[in-house]
Length: 367
Image (cartoon, rainbow, N blue to C red; front, side, top):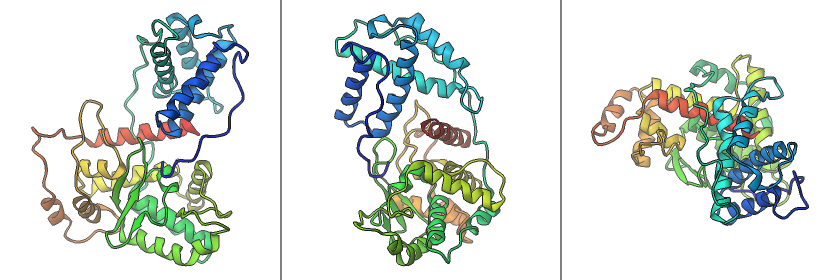
């Protein structure tokens, strides 16, 4: 998300590397196809990891070509995923199992279209039923302020980190969206931030609160110039080497402040996304406005989101975000208006929070 980085370095081969008709060589062709069709690098990387896992499993059983794979073999692989245990001993959730099987379905469908197979053995696989889940932990407004007070804002890195925390808290943006911000993403006069190429390669303009804006301005004037080393590519938040953050270091940074604060709740970047959504819901924000701010184009797979204007969204953000709650909350909410229930589908709070929980699980799987 944000500005896309180029394709990663080639990984070690898996399976049979000598046979041009092997699963491995078809994987390479498939990945090239995805990138040629402008799929995001994140999508290509996720499918690459899932398919490598499958190819390795097949190779251990003497299966090296697509023509050797049938439905019983794929069902056997599904059982393998069911009994698989992660490094911490936990099983894969039903959703995680589906995330590993779905790339296989896409891949075999592509193999059929390319004329390598007559039919896809994965087309009629029955996937595990994903359970409905809600976020494991949410910060209260008081706990948020405790964490925000931890960084030493008298130091360059502490000032940067306070600005990062305030940005996460004000906007609820995704980790990769924050990493991809540039100094040109923030529009001070309008009180908005432009997210380029967010999830699904979609741009969106979202509100950002006054308090977060002030901390970003302090960071830009006092801290960022100290972090810039060599050529400045415009990335907003820089690490100590003057480079853009990578995902895992950003997660570790956020987790470290949670630990230092003494607030004993699990989570890092996505915890703040959950928190923003929940606190704004509790303060009366319409779910559809939060949906727009978080970049959930569709919460239900069968219902389409109704677009809202950025000015309207900014008003709702100002009225309901805990970092700045004016007295006229109800007046702004009443003025916001609502669509006729018969004209537009109304998502529920459970829908929104479940979508956030699924996002967090996806992010954990991608680490």
